[in-house]
Structure formats: C-alpha cells, structure tokens
Image (cartoon, rainbow, N blue to C red):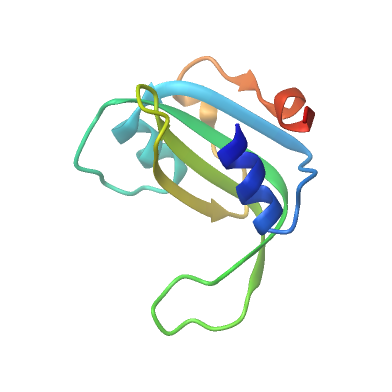
Length: 110
C-alpha cells in the first residue's frame, strides 16, 4: 500500500478516482495490462489506478512529461516486491484475471 501511495504522489495525483486489484498470475496480468511477455509466472497482485497522472514518456530519447489516466503495478504476492508497472489511457478488463477488489478505501487511509 505504501508503495502505491508513494508512486501516486510522485505522479502528481494522490487522490485517484478508482483503484482496483486482483490476485492472479504474472503472465496473465502482463498480457491483460499491456501485452508484455514476462519470464516468470508466480502469483501476483495486479493493481490498476485511475486518475490524472504525469509521467515521463517511454523511450531512451523521450523528453518532457505527458498525462495519462491509468497506471498499473504488479506486485509479487509472496514478497510484495514490484515486478512490473506501466500506464495507459483506458482501464483494462481486470475481471478477466479473477475477482476484482476495491483498493481505493485503503489508499485514502493514512
């Protein structure tokens, strides 16, 4: 929780409009969230947050910042370590991964 709160503050939106999570497997989470292939398939928590975030554009020569509506994080369910992250413009279909839970009340607690 602390990792997500800190990241949202750095992305200049510490008050998101929605935050969801699901317990799933790493390969499935990456496929649904951004289509990326990964080299392991351990249990993970996929977290998706909707708000208005300021991010650095991808790529080695990218400059400036851009605004996105959705950020995601994938955390190893056993260790709590972040394994993957990213951003986009639309909410992915988390229900494809399992039972979706609301994280927003926990993010708002301090």
